[in-house]
Image 1 (cartoon, rainbow, N blue to C red):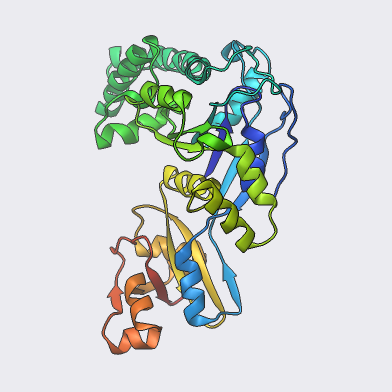
Image 2: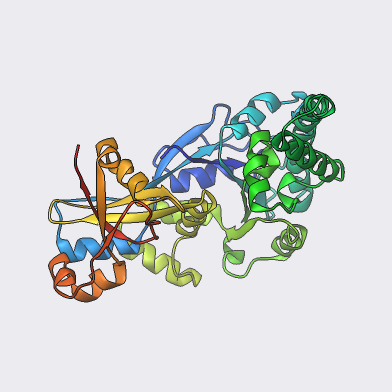
Length: 366
C-alpha cells in the first residue's frame, strides 16, 4: 500500500523527534534549522490489539502487522512558495504525500531555538498554511486560465464543473483559507482531486507539548484548537520528548509503568499512528491460521475481489468468492471450525464491500 503521510512544520518544532519515536529509521535531530534536508521515510507497524488476540487463539508461526509510511520533511520558512529556504524541495515533498501531519510547538524552552524567536503555534500554523495556500493559488490560477478557454469554446459538462470548482477554490484561497474548507458534494470531491492541491490533503494537527501538559494540554493547545475549529481536520496532543523517553525503554512493563505515572493509557505515538492510518482512509482485514496471522491494509470501501488482489494478483483475477468471519464471532467462538459449525461464516461475492476487522478466506481459480 503506497499511501504516505508527511510530517511538516517550521524548523525546530519537534518533527524529527516525533518521527524518531514512531520509526525505526532514525532521523538526525539537532537544535538548529534545516537539520532534516532529504525527507526521511519510515515504514511503521500499526499497533492493533485485534491482531494480538487472533494470534493468541491460533498460535501461528508468524505474526505480520499492517504498516503505514511516514515521511519527515524539511522545515519550512516564510517565502517557501517563492523558493525561499528549502521551499521548492519542501513543497515538492508535500505534493508526494497523501496526508499531512502538521506539528506545532506548544511548549516553552529557552534552550531550544525558535526560528521566529517566540513561541506562537497559531502564527506558526498560519506561516505554513499561507505558503501552501499561495502555491495552491498559483496552481488554481493556471488551471482557471486553461479551463476558461475551453469553456468559452464549448466544452463538456465535466470541464464546466471543474471550472466552477476552480473558481470556488480561488475565492477561498484568496481569503487565506485552505482548499479543504470548501464544502463539496461527493461527485465534486472526486473531480477536485484533478487539481492536486496541497491544502486539500487531509491534515492532522499535532500539538507538541511538555511532559506536564501531555494529559490536559495548555493555553497554546487551546489556541490551536480554536484556530482550526472551522477546518475539516484531525487534532491531537503529544509530548514528543517524553515519547522519545518511552521509546527507549526496553520492556513492555517499563513502558506501562512510565505511562501510568503520566496518567496515560497508551503511548501517544500509538494514537498518532492510528490517526494517520485513518487520515489516509485505510482499514484492516485479517487472515489467520496455524502458519500466519496477518493484518492487510486496504482503502475503505473496496470490494472483495480488490481485497483479494492485495494478497496476490491471481486471487483477484480468479476470484470466485470470499468466506468472511466477523472478528467478534471469531474471538467469541475461538476458531474457524467453531465459526463454521455455528453458521457464522458468510459466503460473499464480487459486490461485497469489505468491513474493518473482517477475517477473510478467498476462493479463486486461475
